[in-house]
Amino acid sequence: MQICSVCSEQTPKYRCPSCKIRYCSLGCYKKHKDTCLPIEKPSSPNPESEDAAGSAEPWSVDDLLHEDDIIDKVPLQRLQLLGQSAELRDLLCNPHLRRLLCSVDDAESKEAAIKAAMQEPLFVEFADQCLKVVENEGSALTSND
Image 1 (cartoon, rainbow, N blue to C red):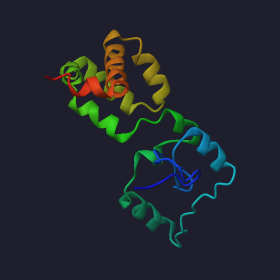
Image 2: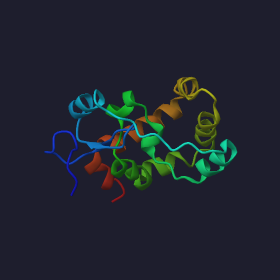
Image 3: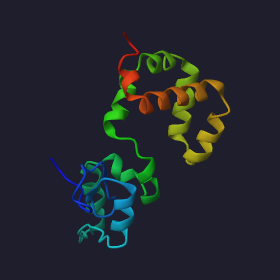
């Protein structure tokens, strides 16, 4: 079992996006970020080969997060509950909702696209159901009984 790299007391839930150490809380993250030494990727002598190599490298959710987003990060186990929700599956049968989700995914400005989509009651219902699933871990597992 791993322990927090900052306090050495708790099980870590998060990973620093810059240096990849694991920590357990916002307090530990704040302590760590003052002394963080980001991992530098080795530079490639040929920039064209770097693009090809970069696309083959696996990415994780951590790669998409900025340091300010860490406190809003949902653990992977809770995100996996979304796939088990019968209510979400029912909502996703709606072609209008699927088009809305695709338009957000394809948008250049995700923030503007989500703001526009939140004007649609169906999208709001979907977002609320997603939050309900990840915030109520115990009841989400029993919703299909």
